[in-house]
Image (cartoon, rainbow, N blue to C red):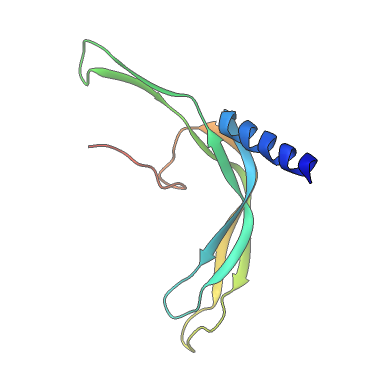
Length: 116
């Protein structure tokens, strides 16, 4: 048991110090109006990527380099949600991460936080 605890602590430390982007197991609640939710465990992207911002003399007065941990390769999986009303399509499709990389945040595939 002590060996298991020390391995778990080592893993936690490694994850805290990890820089980069990797596939990691993730559980979320899939839901849509008219259906009950379904907990799904899948692979998603997780990590920390290099990001920096520095002041410059010309507008907009900053130069930035922003990368996010995002999907590089995925496959789509479709499941049926439980307890859907009769007129509701029970299918729910979500991506499964096959490969992840640090890259530019694309609003077409990712919810990106931007400032105005």
